Length: 263
Image (cartoon, rainbow, N blue to C red; front, side, top):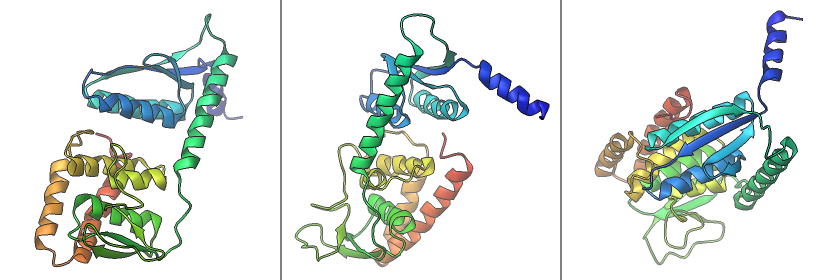
């Protein structure tokens, strides 16, 4: 057997069994705690103590915690990652049970919010004079949810949808803002893609559309300016979506090259 393979296997066997993320968040803004807690829940991490979370030690877990550490530090918090082996106070079996419970709850949440795949070629209806969230959502729909989607642009209120139509980012829409999420993020929640690059685009769209700097994305101003120039010069909503989609294509490709839009 190759000595390198044996060495790697021996090194993995010597690792402490658990990986800990220990973090501290600033008191403001309030949304940051919700954001970090939601991300930890998505990872299936178990809470040992307040601000101390745990995963089984491994390369994937280390990568997940490292990405989250960078996000926390980028938002003004502090964090550290360490390997651990517990001597007293809790057993490995108890930790395993905690992780199974957390991950089972995460799967249940995902199943509950996930939509069935959309039959291709549906008509997606939204408000006329599309701008940031609607342009981005139309791109997401056509690129990842319904490649044959057709779009219809109507007045903001008073539209009665026809059978089979799906509305987004408008009054009484099937897909629109939910809680602190913009429509793009709602679509990602309902049609999960497990793609960090799309999550990063959703954060940019949120910061522009909701005007709250929740994610403090550095790309916000540049993307907003480009979309404004399209809105000012395009002759139709279809043209806005087409030209805006090209911007999001380039942004997505760039984020994929930089490991998911890391800041």
